[in-house]
Image 1 (spheres, helix red, strand yellow):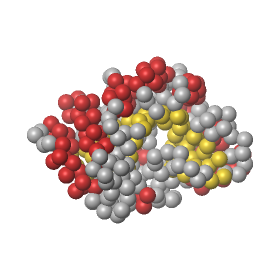
Image 2: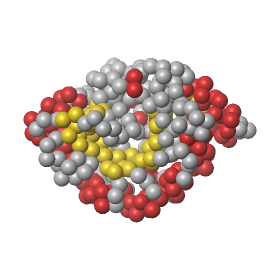
Image 3: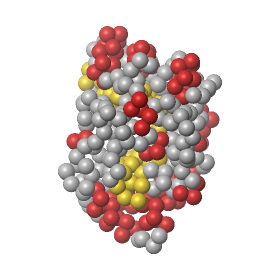
Length: 327
């Protein structure tokens, strides 16, 4: 319940309580399904929200009912003084959970600072455990063992989820091995259907039900978990003998829009109502202008009422690259 005693509800009666905040569009990897071949053309520094502006927006949204915030990029760990920002975000009244989504390359060296800042949870991308495939997909080389970083994050007490974007012909042969990471670790290994945003439209998705069949063939039956294990749309399962869980995020084969509880704030200050559409409100101009918190609150309420019933992309492609939005 918010300070006003009301929940933030859209025009379809969905309670909106989850915000994804992109702090940069820059990334230290150049994944083929995310980044274009040509120079990306980063957002100019002066056009990006400073941390003080983001915190103000988050205070306003927390007053409306936002309870959970996930910090994303690009690669958020590229942003200087991120741990200080996390600490300020944790101090916002009404926000009870702050998470981070990262590719893991820079995570190990920042875990201590993030822990001291009060970060609650970490989502780590691991699309392949094969070094040559990693180099091909990311167009970079890294000596960092993401599996080792997962273990370090667990040792620090973070809630850890592993995100694997499934790409047909690339990593479906690794799904069972990645799922196996949850056998001895209290993590959620999650498998995400590729969405046709920007460069991703050039690849073919591998679907959640196909991944589930592979996992069951190797590890045994997937048993539905009734408890809520996250803030987003993932469906979670247990496997006998596993310390962790398996999750599926299936926006293409099992549209979950009817239960969407999410908003996205881009690094340039645009509050997006839906991942695939252009609906939303430019908050940068408002927070840098003379608009009061009350005025911004009213404008946000008006926009939330217009949140679309569902995403508009399909497998024919279209949209913008994910790093522009916040992964």
